[in-house]
Amino acid sequence: MNNNSNTSVPQAREAMNKFKYEVAGEIGVPLKQGYNGDLTSAQAGYVGGYMVKKMIEAQERQMAGK
Image 1 (cartoon, rainbow, N blue to C red):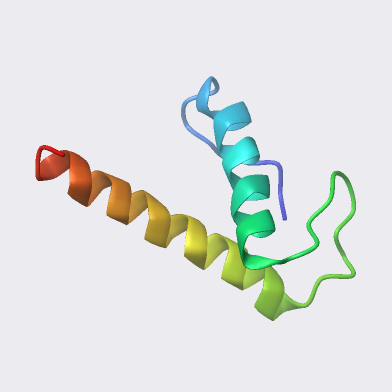
Image 2 (cartoon, helix red, strand yellow):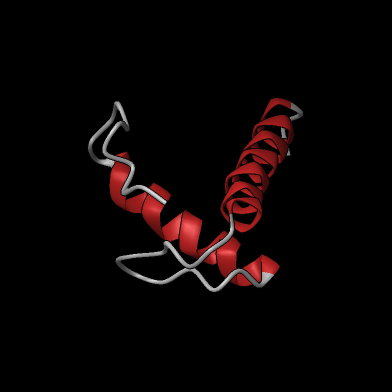
């Protein structure tokens, strides 16, 4: 997993990184600081996909006024 160096808002980089580790913990993927080459592409993809799912859910809640 990269360190979100392509995040267009630099202040969001740390928050996204923290979010990535929270999601990995929720879904049981052993993500750690530094090298994660021992993860399968499926595990890494699952973290990214679940992050997107959670962000969409949060945006939907916000749009619904909740």
